[in-house]
Length: 513
Image (tube, rainbow, N blue to C red; front, side, top):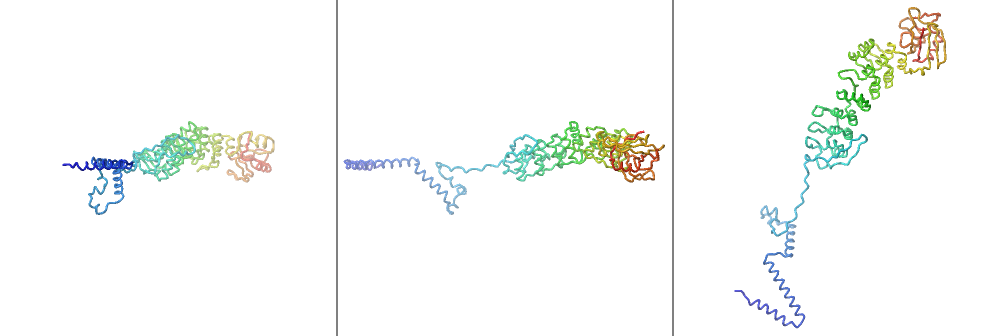
């Protein structure tokens, strides 16, 4: 049975205290304080009975939990805990407690095979290399790891012309000549994209052009030729320096010659080790141009770097020799070795072509192997005219440039030397007797010999001036007053000495009846 007397007695006590002290203000204050304390105690008891937590209890619980984390469990207590409790002691806390914040998880490194580099396209321009900002930071990745179809980061950067990324990749030690699944290197990607910037950069950092490409079915040179882009082709040609002309290179040359694309022609001619030939032919294209009489083609090829001293192959093919009308020249082509384009031009009387060949370095003194003939010998035997001989001797054939000339008259048996249009010497002569006539026409002094010995007769011919590489000339000798020689022009000793001294090689000599 509940006790009701205690609360009544408890209330009566407060009543008595209040009455006894009501006469004073201190009694009122004491009464209010006791009532407030009593109400607070009752409220706290009610909260605990109902199961609520006060801010003070929460603070205390949190403080105890932090101290528990900071101080490890005693060894004896830890050994008694179940394994799960040892690993996660905080999991035993009441559901009402606030869980600790989760630990931050590290950012995962993406799979390199799934990365497609954000490489921006670059406008291709000839000129100095352009340095771009790198498109990505390659440090976290395996830079040689291939992606789909074996394509690497270097290949993509080369394709985009991204020089800054190429520099970073190279600094990280990437393999310059690594190949993808189709045997393509980064240089192939640069060529296919027509990125002259990447091509020059790769070649300057060890990229090679040798070897097969596209699983052996192609080469980097052929790919460069297919682009028809000189800024891409020229550095590849310089690096490859091919010996033989492939069909594609030969066709590219023909196209450039038709279009008169001199830079393209020069790149092809200069960077091949051998001269170009026609398909299924051993003869150089320059030789064919001379045989065709195509002065413009000869000039164009020489201007673009063709070698003027390229020998013609012997024996020549019938398709080549049939281009030559003169039977004597055809015979030399078919039997003699060591003939050059200059010899062929001289023998066929192509004056402008001869001048062009000499201008670009053709050797005047080159000889054939068997008969030791030079270009001027071929010109003299063909009697192609004094202008050709003068050009081959390094003299100008223009009439206004003929400072000195000699006129010889067989009928009057007299020779006249002209200098600058003025008579400098008139002298008697003795020409060929009957049966040994002196040839007539225009000739050129081709060589001089102070004491020449005849190869036909047992005689000396002092102060000899040979006419056009032929077997006669002017020399000192006996003058009976009539034609008495075997075809030469005899002169008095003093006249022979003066002519020998003053007349230059290349001087024009006219002999008339």
